[in-house]
Length: 84
Image (cartoon, rainbow, N blue to C red; front, side, top):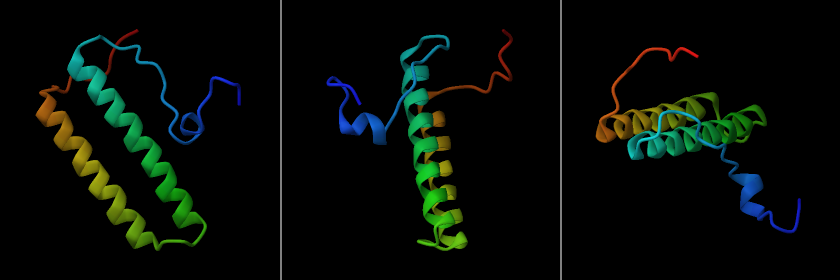
């Protein structure tokens, strides 16, 4: 960790956004990264026996629902795979 790094940078790492810039896409990207980070924590807790598989499933399902709702609220359409 360097002098400019904060402890929260290690717990909540975020990658730069490289997609087509719109405020909606940027917000959804942040939501998606938070979803991925939380799923990682939940999977770690389940793997280490701290929560049951059923509890992990319910938590991840709830997070997925929240992510889908944010996508709908932001008005982001399914565009299929992006060509590079």
